[in-house]
Length: 374
Ligand SMILES: NC(=O)c1ccc[n+]([C@@H]2O[C@H](COP(=O)([O-])OP(=O)(O)OC[C@H]3O[C@@H](n4cnc5c(N)ncnc54)[C@H](OP(=O)(O)O)[C@@H]3O)[C@@H](O)[C@H]2O)c1
Figure 1: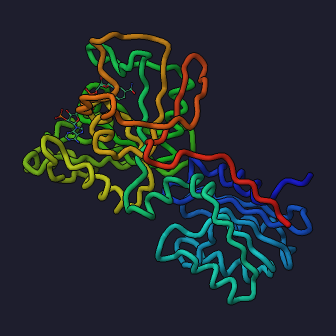
Figure 2: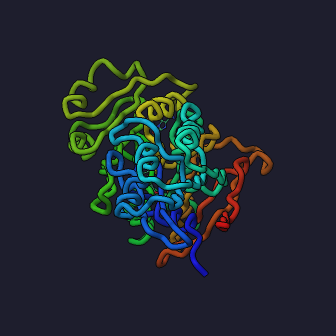
């Protein structure tokens, strides 16, 4: 039996998972009489849109065919011309759209434009397309990046040994997956102690031709060294540091000289206001942020109800109670106060195990969209 073209379009969209940030993943198939005549996907921001790629692949033979797109095509002049123009001039007679544009200002506009031009349009509007673009949909509906918390820990929930050493808790396969998650989100965030202890680079090293990952440090006392690997690489990939206003007025000069952006952030009790931080990252158009710890930072995001997705890598080891806890204080006096999650998937990664979860209050993922063309 022939593959459903929309299933194929979703599969094509996946090719951009680690390279499109901050743009959405989009896949497109052009088909006639059940036969695929063109395929396209969006690979990177500023690059060709999936619709244009698929129509070009048809080599002028798209007239009268049906175009299947996982997401509503664009209708505006951005870095590339509007896809609605390309669709209308290709002569396709019908378009099937997986999900309308999540941007409330754009939602449904392209459907109108295509219908006005005489193209028949069907909108499927299935949650599976929103799930494929969960980061982009979250940014469009909340103005904040999707927060994906990732922690690599021992069986007893430790992310580092007592002295702070964390190299390496998990094996090669889990670390490679963590780099994929960085590329997918387009931004990585850590607490100041991790920056001081590990002196990390936080890039998605050499794995993808993605746009550079933005590195974010929550550093209330502005302790990041101008000689740190983050500061020294700030001209290659952005580094943003959030510090308390009182901490500014001295050291930020040498950091800014290196290209580090330093933001004064308001306090929230003892800590920095994480809502402010996320609003600021959303204003920069970041669709996702991978929070990589340490434990105190993870705890603040969980306690604030700010985690949208959780990936835990468990190494078959124990470090005991002297080790650094994976999650800091949550002030749960009773089991009923616990932060709850539901499991989306469990995966073996060589010697380690990976768990992917969503907060309990979010709808747990349901498999799976099945679209049958008539
Ligand atoms: N295995 C892993 O996946 C993994 C990942 C990351 C880190 N680690 C390890 O974890 C250890 C560090 O973890 P940690 O829990 O001790 O510290 P951490 O979370 O890295 O950093 C905590 C510090 O970050 C700052 N901070 C973070 N969020 C804040 C907020 N909302 N408001 C105010 N300040 C905020 C504060 O800075 P000040 O201290 O300047 O006040 C706080 O003390 C290191 O040993 C590192 O190697 C392991």
